[in-house]
Length: 198
Image (cartoon, rainbow, N blue to C red; front, side, top):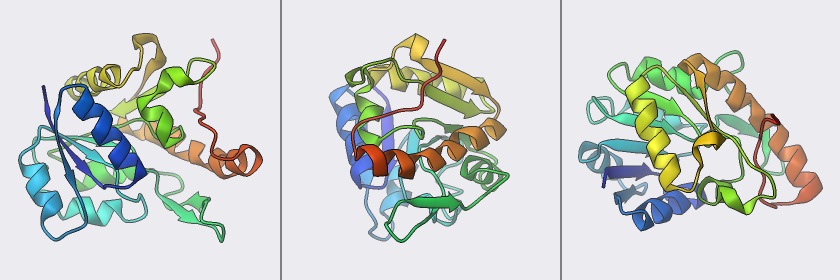
């Protein structure tokens, strides 16, 4: 059992919180009320960033003390929305939200994962007709192992989890968000994920 704080109580945060609670973890969900994120982060070992990526950096940088020594699992993508509300471009082209978070939170171990799929797949990867991939980006091997263990609790098989390397590799997975609006416009919100054929 791990104490986990989920920052953000939308579809992504709610889905992850429910599944992790079901897996036996002690989960606190922080909504947008003042002080909720700080209180939740202060008591957790692992913090999941499920806040909108467009303002995640400001929100989490304000929690630098509360996040000290924690593992921060970043599942968000920082995008500008188009007129239909779907992602229209990257806020940090040539970089990534994960890199900016790691720079702003030097005493926190940031691990990027689960940002290359529709939110429902995060907790039900075996629902797809072919094996999906969950990618890991981060600097701390122990933090990545802890996140790998969490992914297994969510139904991810070991062979579906790929460690891409350092935090800079999050640039690639965050850029994958540019596929999403086109996939949704052609197929709707049918569950999908980016996978590597081997």
